[in-house]
Image (cartoon, rainbow, N blue to C red; front, side, top):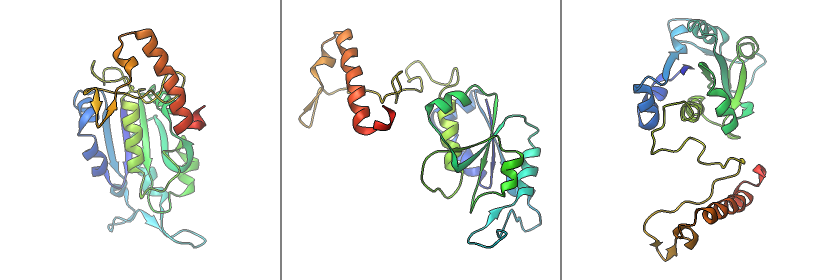
Length: 221
């Protein structure tokens, strides 16, 4: 899988992918992360990539020209995803869908966003990682890279989870987990988990998933 990142701050991406599972996947060649600095395609020697919005208003808008030229330099036919609060909400289902792609292009916006003509001309889809405001698209891009990479064959070792560990197969939140010691600060591990009766343990876990989802994420029910 190749991730192309169109960004004004490539080091934010490059630093993050050098650690943990992403770092191992990158080193093993299971993913490739290609950061393209939009500022390399600035319109003048001052590195200008933004300008005031037509019609007035606060803030600056990223110009279409530098973004388009950075995109063309990739010579890629991968989906171009603009990280935007106006996009479809990112979830595990979307991560699975994207993991089937060979290449993804992630456009990181800044300031008040990008010139609308870029969205009309080259963006395949817009994705939001949540209903809140970030200073730029780089953290959102890293979320997508992380979630998608975990689903790629060969990325996770035999002692690591499959990437769906936060959800059960029914789309509910996963049951609670416990490990040693059996008692911590007076709180005991549920007896059923120590029983060795796997059928009853699975039944307990299914029930806990429903209880937990209703309490924490009733929107998933």
